[in-house]
Image (cartoon, rainbow, N blue to C red; front, side, top):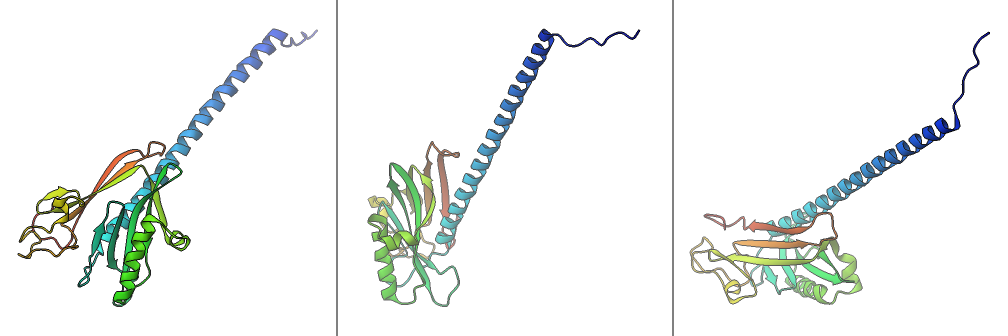
Length: 228
């Protein structure tokens, strides 16, 4: 007579179920950890790309900066950086006023950029120049609609390189024109002219994927001789 097949005992079933449950928990924790790491990696990559785009725009604005006769090409009042640049679309004989600022709202800082439209008349430039400063202090709804949010920031600092040294643009050393010959032409640079270099220091907030302090130096492309 064939021997009767022996089944599992209750204890064996309980042990098997416990082992399967443990394996399921360990597998879920592993998958959850991989998912979290992937999300963190994506967030970090997105944050880095956003920061790179913002810094590229910053460099582009400075590289395209122009000096109009009788008007400042660049101004920093400690809160708003204003500059005049060539229009990015290459429209004939047109410029653009661009402003950068850090605005704190709800306890968080946001790095912002404001561009004007194409400018061909001096009166238009004067209006846009004044409007850029107003936007940095008390922006209207129209100005807010025109601004671009670049990235969250905790703080930012700007330094100018003039006369062979870095200095605070608001200090007496940073505000004065460089010494004769420091602009490469053998003459004093006019007030409001672009400095030899601009140093941007950004404090990235701790609640972002990228944190710490970032320093970016820009060298005036018209500078002759050794870079700052």
